[in-house]
Image 1 (cartoon, rainbow, N blue to C red):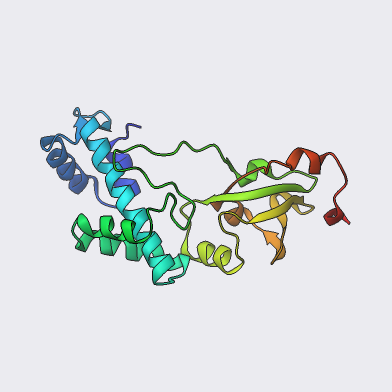
Image 2 (image 1 turned 45 degrees about the vertical axis):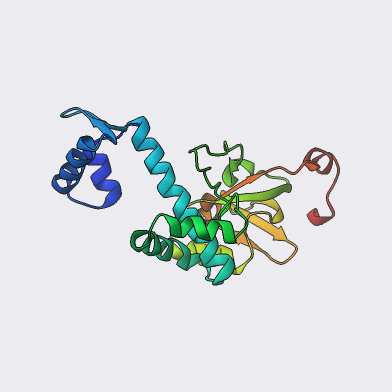
Length: 214
């Protein structure tokens, strides 16, 4: 999706002048397209390069989580540090040693070497919260502040976790959550960080009273 220099600078928290210089360099490398005072967009080569960066980062997150047992709150920063100081072969060797994972610890799909990425069919958790209890499976965790990631990780609110959710009486943006390991309240920041889907048996469960409603 095309963005402006100003938008890039805001997202990267850099001054527009320095971002503009980087854009000029990337245009020269054939990775992006940019017309003066217009938006910036990736070329096909630039898109493939960007996807490869995403791929390496997510593979490194798997290594840090599965092998080094780092908590969620430390994955993003350390993966970026490793990526910036390692050769392209390093993530490839890690991927092979991990038996080629398809998703990172946050549930984000890992692109293929050719740049293909699994289409996302899940929904923001906020769209699945209703006045009645609804069975939901957590599929992904979006980018979120460290304190939110720590909260979710410590309560095992991770991809694959099944839970029952219901809008709290205190407001539609607050949810009452029950899993096999935790029962508590999710505030808007926590709800906003999670993506989920209804399990196959959701229709049957919704059609009859739930014991968890009592």
